Each structure stands twice: as structure tokens, then as C-alpha cells.
Length: 399
Ligand code: ADP
Ligand code: MG
Image (cartoon, rainbow, N blue to C red; front, side, top):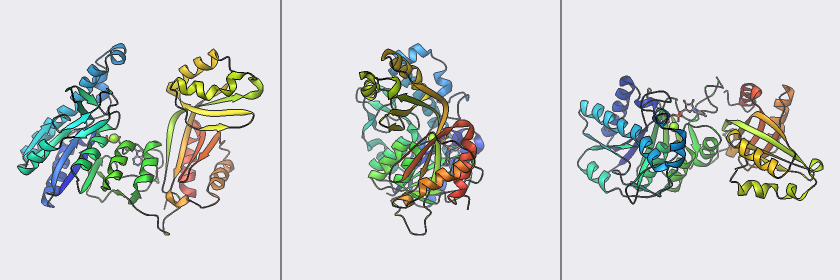
């Protein structure tokens, strides 16, 4: 029994024409000798009738905050609707299919409603269906607690469902179908010359996905990596190869940089020692951690501390700084660019090249950080498009 997971995102199941393409992909997998397990997201994107955001608009913000279990139950509806519609489309084309909720598919989670973690997958139901030649169509993004309550797995959760099912079913591959040709060298909506990455390592995809390339969810990548199952990112509307994600090793033909991505809505905070000569300055980072505010880029110097946060956390952070009587400067509307590539390991001069490229065009660099395969730079949002395109060109990703 050669199992393949085929996950279809929101846009892939949104129209009849697209659902016909989904059916064609499932048919092809069967023809190639696989037993497909289909995972679906809710139909469409924000504004569409059954999309997650639309469902959430039906309840009050107060209810959402105080009743996570109820909120999860509502959010699960979108994917459940998709499973039935997709099963209908498959049956119309002579493929026997049965819709399953996450719970019916055996996906058991803890009770962290809205951000639940999968603790176990009981593959019994799915295996029985496969044995009978039936295609299970599983609702993505959801599971069930051991007490039987519906849970959701956080944004991008359908990718997680697909990869975790792949791991427990020991699938031969996980196909993530979406509305682009695969993982690109940059977000194709901003960098016109973005190219398809044909083969990339799990680690690099994790970095790119974690830093904004939302074509696959970073958590999902890790599940596939642990089980060493290849992931293919493909376009639902085309018959192309897409991107293969596996344990690819770096080869000397590869470029130093594999891809560039970005995160919006960063806010930079600068706290100077000279303006804050009191005990609170030294314990500031601890106090921030106690408030559960996550810091992004952090640079500590003898005379100042500079860090970035997500704009959503700004109000809480400013409250804390006032409480501690700390003077600070804020820079709103920043973006963080991440330049990722295994090929940069041990290669000198990459940071200098980035800085020179941007300085030449008068793009101010507000902050930087680096790890073994990623360099981050913070810039003003107004410079984002220009900076991404320049860096894309200078690291030969246009070719
Ligand atoms: P789905 O609904 O199929 O899960 P997503 O919206 O989650 O689709 O992911 C696909 C989108 O990710 C694309 O439409 C594209 O605009 C965006 N994207 C951002 N960065 C990248 C990148 N580097 N490569 C490919 N797509 C990207
Ligand atoms: Mg997605």
C-alpha cells in the first residue's frame, strides 16, 4: 500500500473548475499506483462564505476571547463543508470517497484550543477505508481532544494535518497543492522576477516559511523532516513538477542564497542607557519576557538596547515601558527581510554585499542579525519592494 497525502488549500477548492483539477490530481495518483489521502482547507479566502475569517466574523470578539472551545467548533465548520463538497466531486467522477472530520481521521490533540498540538494519530479508520479502495477526504486544520472536543491547530494548520498524517501513515510523499508553482525565490506578488526553487532542504524551507513565505507552514515542515518524507509543493491548476523539499545536501553548483522573504508589521524600539540610568534598564528584557511579549531582533550594546516586536504587541509593551518609567523611541512601519541559504555557511562577505547594495540606493538599514543560514535586516516598509528586488538581483536569483 503506497500512500500519498494530497493537500489542497483554500483557493484550490474554491470553484468548480478548480475542484475538477483536484479530482484530476487524485485520479492521477491512483493511476500511478498510490492510495491517496486527501486533506482540504476551508473554501476560499477571507470574505468567501465558508472561509475561516468569515465564520469568525459571526461571533463577538468577547466571545472569541472567553470561549476558545466554542470558537474552535465554529472554525472547524469550514473544513468540514469542504470535505463533503470534495467527496461529492470525486464520487461524480467515479472515485469512491468518504469525508472525515479531523477526529474521525484519528487526529488527537491536547486541549490548547485555537493552537492545539497533535499528540497522537490513530490511523485505524483511514487504513480501513484505504483497504476498501475508498479515498478518505480529511478536514484539515482540526483535531479532537481525548474527551471529544473539536480543536484547531493554528493558522496554516491544514499543512500540519497533511504532514502529520503523512508521518503516521508512513506516506511515500506529501503533496501540498496551492495557487503558485511552488516555493519561489521571493514572494511573487512583490518580486516579479521570482523563480521557482526546484529542490530545497527542509531546513531552508523552515527558515523561509517561518520568516514569511507562507506557502507552507513551518511547523508542518518539521513533521515531514522528522520522518524524512519528501514534500512537493505544486500548482493545482498546472501539471508541473513544483518544488521538492527533502534532505537535499548543498552542492558546489548551488547559489549562496536560496530565497528571500519578509515579514511586515515590525516595530523597532530603542532604549538608551543615558536616558534611563536606573535599575529597570538592566532588568528590562526579563520584564518583557514575564509579560509574554516575544522579541524579534535583539541587539544589546553597552549604551543601548534595540529590539523589534510585532505591531500587535506594541500597546502592551508601551504600557510596560511606562510602568517601568523607561524612556524609549519607537519606529513604526518596519519590515524584516530574511535572506536564506545553506550556501552562505562559511562564505565571507554576504552581509557586506547586502549592506553595500542597499546603501548604494539610500535604503537605510535599521538593524541586522545573522545565524548560520539566515541574515535578517530591518528596513522601513516604504523601501520593501525596492530592497527585495535589489537583493534578488544581486544574489543572482533573477536568473
Ligand atoms: P493555500 O490557501 O493554498 O494554503 P497560501 O495563501 O497559504 O495558500 O500560500 C500560497 C501563497 O503564498 C501564494 O499565493 C503566494 O502569494 C504566497 N507566497 C509568499 N511567499 C512565497 C514564496 N516565497 N513562494 C511562493 N509563494 C509565496
Ligand atoms: Mg496555506
